[in-house]
Amino acid sequence: MDLLSIAGVVLGFTAILGGNFLEGGHLSGLYNGPAAVIVLGGTFGAAMLQTPLPVFKRAFHIVPWIFFPPKVDIQSGINKVIGWSLIARKEGLLGLETVAETEEDAFAKKGLQLLVDGGEPVSIRQILEVELFVKESRDMHAAKVFDCMGGYSPTIGIIGAVMGLIHVMGNLADPSRLGPGIATAFVATIYGVGLANLLLLPVANKLKSMVQQQAQARELFIEGVIAIAEGENPRTIEFKLYGYIEDAQLSLTEG
Image (tube, rainbow, N blue to C red; front, side, top):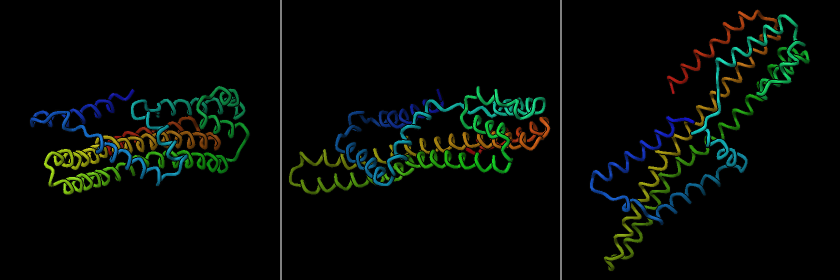
């Protein structure tokens, strides 16, 4: 479980609600059913219109990664590839057949099977890179669904605000109906901006980061498999792959 994501959600909403309380506001003042319907319905509707069904379904399939991220262990991947290279050096590529049968990662398993089948390094790279590109592209497009929702949400909030003001202007003669209309106007804006900046955009960016981490792990396997196919020394392969750890650390720092 990703405790940082949980802490971020809790802190974000606590800061907003706590600030409202310190200013003398009440939680009930931030609840407005019509505003929620306008913002949530409008945001999801716009995203559904923009997004193909498979991509939309994939987006909500991977959203649990925010709290339960898939395990990506670069060090473990390096150790695994080095182990393969040692087996190949001692027993030949056919010695990896047993390893391929027990490998749990589907991507790594395909690379091993291509090695055992005696594929040329160029051919192996092309096959694996196509699969890498397809997987990364699919999940990146899914993550961008939340990006687009984060873009629409504030605008839908403004639409809700305008609708509330229209309602107010139409009832100037009845002061008792002015309050609810004004409340819908301001609360819809809060919902739109808050939903985008506290949930949708952070979710999109974190998912994209996770997709990049998984792609990086697959790139490591590709380089390792190609190095084994070309008969490189296990020590040389180790030095080459350790660059991925430095790259992963740099990516986390920049993120």
